Length: 441
Image (cartoon, rainbow, N blue to C red; front, side):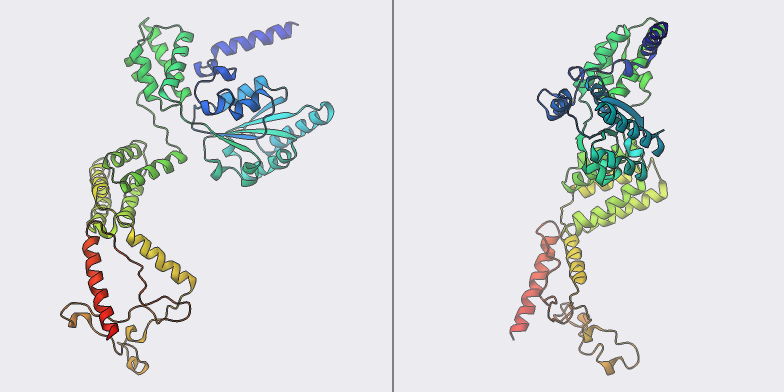
């Protein structure tokens, strides 16, 4: 009895000393803020949790979005045994022991087991493989939590046997609700503007918001002051940007698509996001050089010149000064006329080569400069374009036509009517008309 009283007192004391984010953790689905698509009444996940029929799931989302909170709510509502493992510290031995205990409970008492593994992406392939048979047979129900894309980090067989639930960063108004609750729990006077500023600067991360609030409350309480934005600024230092591997790929995707979509404002914003997050400026420059040919191409050939110049400037002056060169390239590329016809052309040509079309060089195009080349017909019949007053001549340049081969009239590159390509299209059309007239004769 004394031990029970002592354990209860110790538990209460630890709870009182726990960080604010831990003390504020919801204990029911109704207390959860945000993630309405998952926890709203009637949603599939909520129905499964309330009916205690949850099968193996993976909660995927940025830090501070409620993955562990959802698992804790399951622990408080399920009739099954709930066991926690941390992928940071648990090894294959721990996993196997947990599975053995689950099998014993199921065999002796008919009681199922839910195993919650936080940071499951840190598990190695062998550790994930050790889970697979027991998940497949139903010995355990797995709840995995990860901040990394499970399609990259979770074994395909394990992922296919689990239902994936994506958690999104909390909305500002959701964070604001949590901060109001936290301020009440801390018992401090708070200026409304201070909580508004904190809600806007935490990037949808509830844990970061509550941790910063706790620090700000401590700073204000030290001098018996009302919590203000200055306390929030001191607690945050600078606004910490979330930028994991998933964020990197998503931001880069938004960056490229914004420039491709001719939106210089968005292009500059995502450039700033990458630079502020410490992304590799050389990587950004490389992406701009690629985009200049892939998405602008011959609609404005100077786009490639500008992109390469920005990359060269980065090599010469480095950051932070080179941010100006990168920004200039972003604006130029975003506002330039767009065409992907050069990209489509090379992709199409390479596809033909891969398909095995005839790729023998016609005799008149072969190297005729070495001794005895003309004996083989190499270079014979070739017409030098510069000898023609037009600067070009109509002659065969593609391989000889053969079964399964390409036609001499194949058009890999078809100009658009954007920017300079409209003029290029006219020149190609004139050449084509002349060629057709020659063929008719």
